[in-house]
Amino acid sequence: MFHRGTSYLSVGQRDDDDSAAPSSSPSSNGSFLRGIGCLILISCFLFLITPAPNNNHHNGAKVPEQLSPHRRIVDPRERTRKLPVRVQSLLAQSQIVGDHLQEVKDGSKTVEEAIHQNVNKQGSGIGSSAHIGAGALSRNAKSAPMTLNEILAFLNSFVKKLTASNVKNKHATFHGIWSAYHDLVAKHLYPWDQEYLRRMPPRRQDGSIYLSVVSFRDEFCVETLKDAFNKAKNPDNLFIGLVQQNCEDEKCRRGSNVGPDPDCYHLFCSSSMGKKFCNNGQIRLLRMKEAESLGPYMARYFASKLWMGEQWYMQIDSHMSFLQNWDALSIQMLEKAPSEKPVISNLPPPNTSNLQEKIAVAAPRLCGAVFATSDIEGQIVRLERSYNYDRIKLDTPRFAPFVAAGYLIAHSDMLRDVPFDPFLPYLFLGEEILLSARLWTSGYDIFSPTISLVGHRYERNQQPKFWEAIHMAFTNGVHNPLQMLVLNRIKQQLGYPESARDMIKPKTLLTAVEQYSMGHSRSLDEYLKIVGLNVSLKEVTYTAWCETGQPPPGFEKHNHLYNS
Image 1 (cartoon, helix red, strand yellow):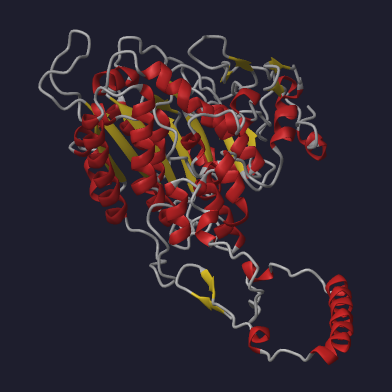
Image 2: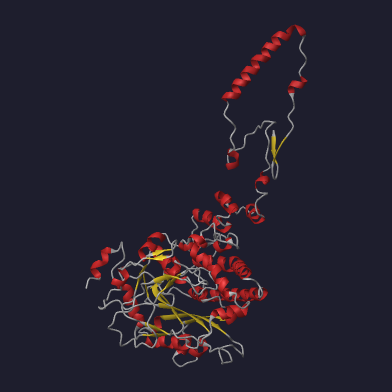
């Protein structure tokens, strides 16, 4: 008989009945020996035909009630003693890694990914409450959309934690800075983000536009807000999410200038035209200090969380100008694009252009890309400038291969389908090719605008740069190696062989990467082929369809729209 202990199986001592049997008389020895021989033969025969015992009890089957006294019982704890303490802890808490245990051990999959994959198989999907760092929430957890106050309270709390972490790691190496940021996000921001995605508000159908504006010490920010409202046909349907990253000290390093940066929000809301919109709650603000800046991508991440269900989503830089009625014209373009999920984008003309005079001219289109050659850019794909390819302006937007992060407008479900990744800090490169690929594989089609609706201030050489703030927060020169490290997360998603899963170190660069990666509507390989990028050989192939204004391969059914 065996007994189930609290942690392992033990076998009790079985009595030997044969040892208590009376001895036989000499006259019966022959018969006795013949009987013993027969028993031995029968036992051998039964041994040969009996199936080997199985181990199904390890997989949940009922354990047999009798065990051989000679069978070795293995303590199940021996199977996990050689695993890292972190994995043992997950197993002890029933957060089972499951079939991916060996992948976790050899580093081909992170614990977080294994758990997420198991959770997703159970039907929770993105936004699951079984996120990392917070434990499983009750099935009866809140399901109503988060309020703006809830969102801002959390984001402000996270920024305070970020500040404390930065101070603590002031003299850390770039690996140490990444490690501290990763751990902070995995513990606080990522679990919250998954909850936010589960509780996003429904998309409204009222013609409203949400304008994401991120500003880093930008003196032109207030003019951008004023121009956006002044030139809007329906300013009451315009809502702005402003992430303002300023130096608020009495002495700020801005060339020869001193004093705090202009407060974009205050200047706009105290103006005669801005007061109304601020009082109506049409400007939503997240304040950050210069030293808390994580780069433009993460600023856009924060701004995306201030969306409150507006029908259309638009993101711009904070130094832009607008065409009259830009809002109505943007919606008109989106509705005329031959797609259920259109995204319109390009690198706009300079702000010195007279947009009103160019209204009869086709807008420039963003067609080209190159692999960066600088040692500090990691051969990431960089977009070239937009060019005027079309002699004839059409009312139907033409297809394009890429989006520019400084200007795009889309169906606002992109925030739900292609959420910003909180594990991409300190970047100035890589966000545009990643976003383009994620959008396309998620079923979104990219178009260039039919006319130029915005202008961009490109000459800002004397303005502060966010990487200077990184050097101030940590140590001088740390930004370049830090960016190179984080770029591996982007390159892994795009299929760069040198950033393959088994090549990346540290493995924390892959934490929850599947939650913020390619979509499942179309393949990445198909996208890279259509846009002419070979990430293995770092080669660009001329595809011609963008430059000639025709639909890409596979979209020939729309050819009739562009035959002029």
